[in-house]
Length: 82
Image 1 (tube, rainbow, N blue to C red):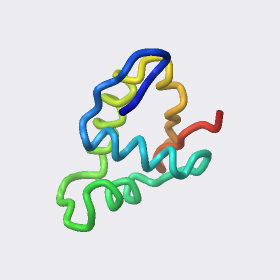
Image 2: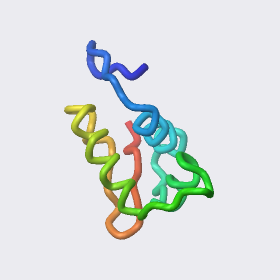
Image 3: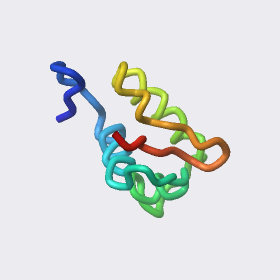
Image 4: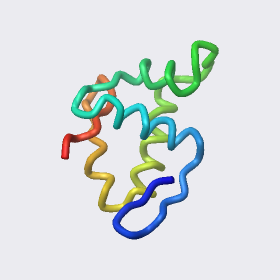
């Protein structure tokens, strides 16, 4: 369950897995390929840009808290330290 402010946010399993991956490595840049391995495993057959789409949806759902998901251009994403 994810709570932003006082409101519960409904996430898909994939969005929740991506969020957990970023938070677990708070402050570190996580490459798209690393996110793919952690979320989908080594059988993933899509494009790395799939991560971008899921991050975009995740940010939309997180509202103001989305500022914590930072893009590291050309590399991946990072959860900003509080």
